[in-house]
Image 1 (tube, helix red, strand yellow):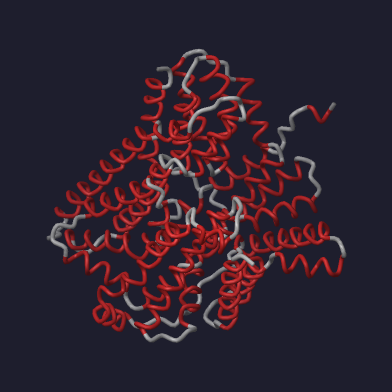
Image 2: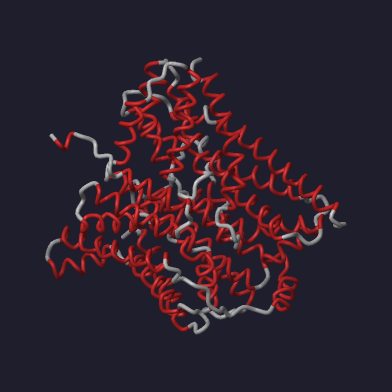
Length: 234
Length: 339
């Protein structure tokens, strides 16, 4: 009877999240409140909502583990100047430019992800200690000291390379979770296709994503060039 | 006796408890009690496992009851952590760092050798994965089950980190306590963003249990009636991106959009190829992932890791790429879906 009707009230949770993010409340607080509210509006008792919150959080510990474990060694190396050295080292390489460096990283990230080596990059292990300082270093080499805004943009672009490379690379790896997941989901609907078939149809997008992001990196580098060389760089 | 994922959690839990103690002792942190409590709760959550359930079971004499009490308690702790984080309770303190001059000198002294421990992490992970995957060794060491492939990756990464840490400590001659100070420095600088991915994953499950997905499927199938190919593929691709932005995960939105639009309209009604529908649909979802704060581990955590003052900076840089790739996806779908 009433159970048959779909309860639209839990969608309020999504509204809370969108509004909370838009008015820039603390995301952790917004998301937690949204989850609890959605659960309560779905007529789950508070005890059960807390229970689900707890078990979900316990089951998602891996997400934090891969961020947490590398911090000790990365931090220790940073203490002794890893980031400074990465910067100086890349500055000595004559041919290095911001765009060449970032495109190389994007390429390596995407190709290695495509053959299943998704753990070769990462924000805590590669971007913060190595790629970001190197990108900053090459920019400093060509343009002298950088205004904060431009520096931030270069660093953010380095992080973006990691994401774009990973996302559009891993999905064309046959044994990757997403491909198996889609195949399993479709077979639940009586549609049977080979995982390889799905992976192959990912290739056109993967190539386009690489090219598009490369063009954006080159465009950014050009803009840096025109902006920073006229205002008195080298 | 196999190697269990719990052992890695113990390592994380103990590190976090040490970090919590250092936070409490740090007089330069204006909120040291709250900051320490935050990391302490987090550490305790990592320590929870089979053993704590067994212990609780000894008192309540009912394993299901023990499990449910554990989950409830963790849930309450998560809410407390969210409150601490949300009200600005996780602050920076003072960390035993070297002077800029010393650091420059050390950078010169160690030089390229500084890269070696850092590169142990990716190299160790990859070697470990290649060594263990589908081998008798993995069978003997990790046992069997669907969790094993994840466990291999996590174990290999941890092994790479520990190996890198040993090399780094040997090289620099730092005390054994130094890595904990460094973890604390980085954890504090990431702050609340650190637990956001985990909370988001949890909320995704809660939304699912609350029937959010069902309501969206219902809305989509009820109000969208499309027979033009271009409009149908556009709705599907853009819908994947938008829904992923809301849910934060393309895996969560794919079943909804595929069941709501992909299978009934693109495949059954218009005769599209399901493999193309699936592959490009998922990629359209990834375009959404690049544009949403809900995918915190990819978008907000890196901004914190790079100390960017604008936490949405990475997203802003990614939006043009994401939109262009989304447009390409629509074109690809239009031309290849119906071959």
